[in-house]
Length: 129
Image (cartoon, rainbow, N blue to C red; front, top):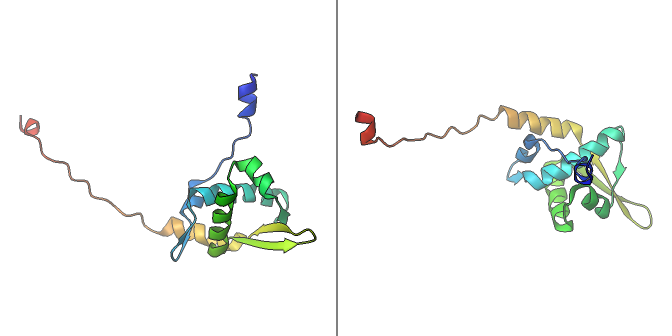
């Protein structure tokens, strides 16, 4: 196997439904969806308990910058999907997914009817030939 193929072996997958989470005026968006997907990955491996991830860890795993991570975290906390807690000395940030809230928002997004757009097709003189 080539080195390039080996480098591409651990992709970050995210479900587009996570980018469509919404509560009031707060929307998750694609960056928050990538962050949340990575948190879900670790959530499943930690048995749903609190998990500790450094900013550098998250950058290494997702390539999200500090600003992108902070924006994603703020949105996810506002949505009630992510809980954060500072612990210890030196202080470290621990995270936990609020699974019930996440499921509720996913179900809500799935039941909201998509806006149907009407496309008008202009008539052409070729259609009459």
